[in-house]
Image 1 (cartoon, rainbow, N blue to C red):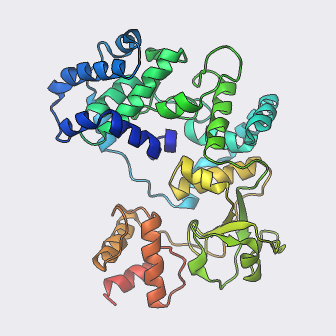
Image 2 (cartoon, helix red, strand yellow):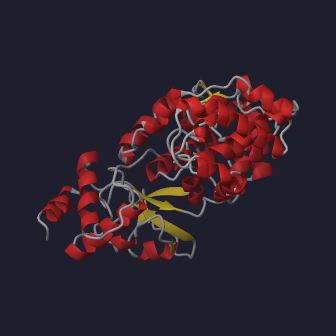
Length: 409
């Protein structure tokens, strides 16, 4: 996932800008979708551009000769499932007892490697193992589509040609550097490769040879894969020896409108309002920057997030995925099992959530994409509406909120 993943793969701004510069002229040509029959001509033009960008004709020929348009890639791209599971639904499924057991075993198996990685990059083993497990089930499920063919097809497609053209160029650079052959580059439909599902740009820029065999092999080498993930996390701001997430208990009443991953408050703020650790012990009254995150509202699980948690949302901008990965890492690091919160939480269907988005949009709110997924824009709109109605402003969609919106009040 994320900068290397299944559904949500945000690209760096730099990569998007670079692609716009490199392929600005071509992108105007591709503004309107072309028929698949035009793919060979487009591919020939891309080969010339790749050589102009400094990639050897030999590599271009080895990777792109005979590549054909792939309708299956387009079908998967058009048919991506909307990520609409609740935090408890997703985390209960993904952080299974088996994944906890296997993760613990891998921490022991590669203990020496993890020690060296943490010393060099500052990222602890549990954080890496959690991403490893969620992304590919520890390298067992990496996808089997031809990455070069998928990237070429998406570069030709009219939806996001600049983005994928830049990725295809970096895939060629990975090949030219000797890390992988074109045939070895296989994965999901968007060109992700390896045990951490790196996009080619991430692979090219952050892959490291940690086992010393002369190759950056993120398909077969666990040390290379783990160290490369750590290198990437460090590059986007991971702070060594700092926490990322703690589950907490919240009282019956709080300034709920302050509970959001984007709102930073000193830990003292939450301590004064009665937030405690799960065992009832008070929080330290200090100025450490935190956010209070309530993925299922005031009655569901509650978490204090720290600056390192922002790295999780950089890896994958889905709050549900990010919290799950961070929680999984805390469990591997010795934290207790998940506490479900202060009471049962009713989960609206995707259709009901979509209706809330539609009703909020009619009232002039920016809710982002109307898709039944509660992202940052939808949370902000819900919070503002809850304040207007005098409801606890925890930004969580409820049947009561939907009823009041339907009534038009």
